[in-house]
Length: 527
Image (cartoon, rainbow, N blue to C red; front, side, top):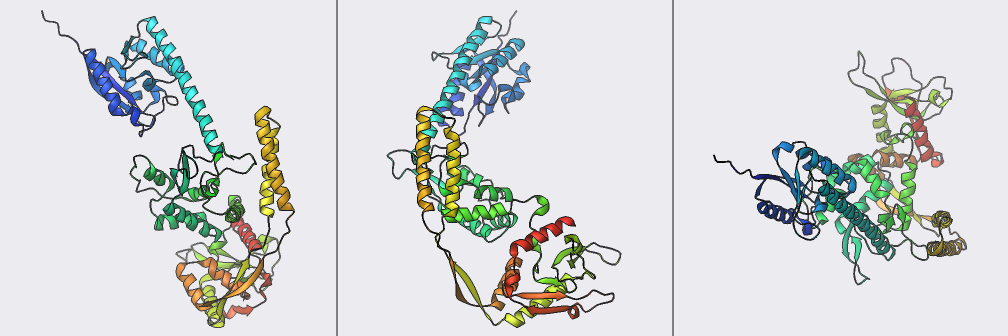
């Protein structure tokens, strides 16, 4: 009687920590697995391929491809890897895998064992399990040694102003270091750096993160930080065409010290012997712009109920109640039996602000907007727009505050250090202190202003701003020339809105943009 010879069914398991790692590529692993499968008289029934998966972080049972195969043990007789480190990198995972193989009577095969030859283990033998645990222990020690070497090398490279690798920041491109014989430097990437300049300008111009994100998605579709990294990968990877900016990405980008060219480690700037931040690339924005940007962003860090909603109010600080003299705020009349859609209104908010108004004014918004438009262009349409520019003075107070914070941080670190580390931090602390002393000795020279003729009339500037939908710029023009519009008493049956309006020009010393914004935020939150 003929008894057929059973061919060993082998599942080939391949894994890569990074798809760009050519030294351990899937092709190389596959050839080794096929060779060892033929050597044992078996055949590869299928492949469990896990790209971009770290064995030190993801257990075999949790891997996208291998995990489901481990739940179907009846479909193969053995699992073959190229080497042990392709399977596991920790004793804990090895113990689990050995137990699984013992329970399901599976063979574990490694094309290249510790001595270079094939390693095949039958997990029904206690000796095989012991061998595996010893090898897993060696693999775990190797991982820890690699992590320590990588961490130490990265810290050293940062201290000498060389990029140690990792995620490429938006606006940067790695190039050979211009001053060192070896190593890398994060140079300015022209296209994305120009986008950063535009983003900074828009935010400093009071545009919201939402507006900036929408502008980016319109003007620079799919040019996101993630796609920037994909384009600079080796080899380059295809961009995700559906990638989009969002407000969080905008604010996060503008908080990154990499914009200043600083090298960072564990969220803190790397410093040289004098305590100065070490640069691993040229700054994309100067220090003055950086500080202005952070102040602007800090001013937006308000609770949700107090966020500035004034951008939607075209006449904030221009429109006043004729009864009590308080500012009018924007609100909406809900749809009702005689009104199919919500209707925009301007209302006196005396009660919301704890004041008394005998007859609070309220009025439909659209006729008032049209009235102000007509009156403003009639009064100022032919007048040339004169811009007031500021000539910067000499004021190191922001830098002094930054240095003071650095000194406090370094002083706190010094108390927990000894030996060479304490000496290095003490030298940095002294360098920062010396610079602080020099800056504090310099006098503050105030900035001055000058008027510059633009050659553009208010009418032209007004129409351009309206065409762009820039409500904020229109509002600023009204306030800068001192426009004040009062809304007279509201009475039943009034049809002619303009009869209740008065247009005056007053000395524009009443303008307080910050206070108006806070008042409007408080009113909106009370609705």
